[in-house]
Length: 445
Image (cartoon, rainbow, N blue to C red):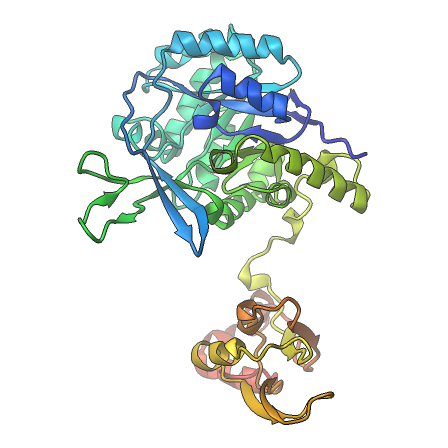
């Protein structure tokens, strides 16, 4: 059996599946119940500055019968007394010494405030701290949360304050609401952070009620921006994770990363691990389906690792990072064409419509008499000589493997844009570019 145990900057966990700092980790009851179900760790809902939460905290995107594809919230940090949280953290750690208990924290931007609460948290026996530099609503208006995380100098400064007194590992949680997430990641490392976690929620307005024109969610007749999470944010989270994990400065530091954002299944979790995460944190999926989803996560990852011959999670961390590249290094000579399996085709003609209206007009409807058919009927047929391999047709096709993209050799040179511009700098001139494309037999569309 595969070993799912991880070591995250010295914090041991029976598996990489953790609860994120959020409503599911708001109390000792919840965290203990989660551990009993199989979760390896939990990041306690952020404690710190006193707050009052509001009613109607959530807005959702539901899509074609699927509930909570995206979740927006205007909930703040824990509204329970700090003393109560600390008492329950101590109890949980005493009852589950083998599980990871990390405490998320956020206070005003004063050195004394940060250092005082760090000491109080560490007195509970918690395994580590997560500095919440990502909350995009409510707290940011008070100069906390993403207001700190969006300024690398603040990120570094507060991290240093904490590291000066912390005796346990310190994780810095990064906001996605920046132009370049690598800069605050580097700042956290410069502040001596033990680890990074990302992403926090994305700033958003969920929608407008078309009957009363009210912003969703409606808080007593008013609404505003909140934090966006759920399955819909996963591609954004994967991109930002990959940007941090592939950064040379981050890699040299050796700090581990905890991945967050839209994780619902073991497959989602594995993608985060392959792109550089040592642990993964889950929130929205638990709010939707409950704690028991971790059972499938554990079984799924374990079975996959057994099938592939991997013995430990450590072998998987960042395995796909070397494959991350930039457009300038893509092979311009790589060519695919679409091929349709007419034995599987149901003649919905979505491929034809998509190609004709929104792509490159290289699929025709032709009368064909297929084997076993008594009459000719119109079938979609690809003109391969005109196909540019955009792959839209296979994406709209409702039948698995009916349309496949097949690599073909065209004789064009296998060269990247970066190589091309170094070898032929004149290619940056449009007329020269067109001339080269014709010489290289690159189709012009």
